[in-house]
Image (tube, rainbow, N blue to C red; front, side, top):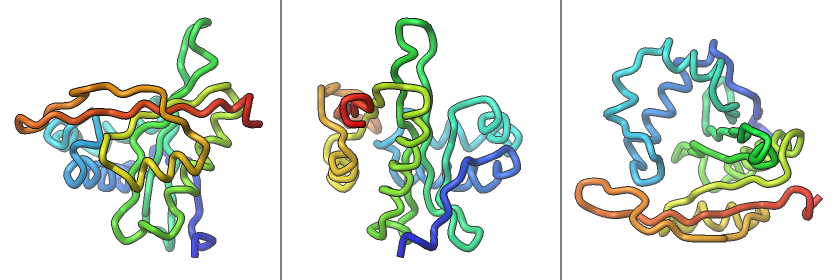
Length: 170
């Protein structure tokens, strides 16, 4: 079933599609992202195009021209941190869940990461068991917990810190 999905980097021309899925992610899963719907929804499509041109590398999973999921990769900068990168902004639309799209996105992001870094880190909200299982199956291991990482409407959310060693697992 996953063979019908194409994974590719989002370009500035994809900004409208990216804006739609990003805002959906922030609206439906606010606890999973450091940013907020209220913050990003005020930005025009051009802001998202600029982000795609100069920000994290964002990969998208497409089926029949529809964007079903996204994940970002950011390589750290500076001589002391350039061996590390982060997976960020992972989101798969409800209709595309449980068919392997998340794994396709994570695998593509790890393939991209392996070209430039030795270690990939990510943060997942505690309690998001499907995401935790996905990352564990992809070889990520938990190395810490950030208590009260986010506070939304008076409720605290803890973040699980995970990492995958690309050198030791290659």
